Amino acid sequence: MKLIQLRISKDERILGLLKNNKIINITQANSTINSTYRLIEYSIKNKKNIQEVILELFKNASELSYSYAEILDETIKETPEILVPIDHPDPYRLFISGTGLTHTGSVKSRDMMHSDKEEKKDETDSVKMFNLGLKGGKPGKNKIGIAPEWFYKGNGNNLRGPNQNLDIPDFSLDGGEEPEIVGCYFIDNDRNPIRLGFTLGNEFSDHETEQINYLYLAHSKMRNCSVGPELDTSLEFKDISVECDIIRDSKEIYKSGELKSGEDYMSHSLSNMEYHHFKYDIHRIPGDLHLHYFGTSQLSFSSRDWKFRSGDKIKIKSPDFQGTLINSVNKVKSENFEIKKA
Image (cartoon, rainbow, N blue to C red):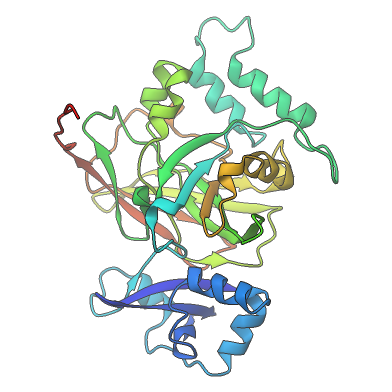
């Protein structure tokens, strides 16, 4: 099942269920369920899974007058606004993180970024980390494997939805698109993570800052990122194709071609990556949401001879998702601030 969130007006939003190009207004059947988060709460309270609840609500819901294609078209102004497919009422309780060097093709891009191009006698730390994953990232059922690389991208205040801007602050050296699959998780009252499903994501980062030294990874990751437009509650994380196009002044300046994601193309199993994220007590606080980026098989940065400009559009799509995730890049002046004494 595929879910979307829409803003009808400033104070009104609804939860929608996709049926081909049609949108079923789930909130019409129960006005308290006006978001994916409220749907999760309702399903747990009533001891049912999300699919059961949706099917019950579906009986008393009707179609919107707008199609999914019309909703996604930002040039049609009179349609409701498409939001991220999942968010938290309190953005500080939504945590954004990710794993890198998990795909069998990812090590080449990172190795080029973190090593001397003329001298590669010794393995870089990127190669060492990747090889650890190859040896112990898929340990088998009920076993714990080697931990993958992990990074933090901030809270819900860093999250952007379809058609929203991804900001490049003036202290950044550049921006870098990263088309990925994002796992969405809710922590229940017993402190257990519930995997809600997957969505498309752009784990936007500053690769030029990271290139200076890999220990700048944390600095390079603290940027806006985007997810959407839909949350798929039944997608199998096995073999997923993703593509990325970048448009400038209505002309295509970059095309990734097919990128592969999912366990079949990764050095770590999904369960192993999930375990090493949620093994920390602080990542299992009841009511929290976690969005986790699972890496990409290829970075375009190492072969790029241009930088982003304001107005450039990044389009991420996959045959496993109906909608395309589109964001514009916006270079912004960072806020002035003053360190004061208490």
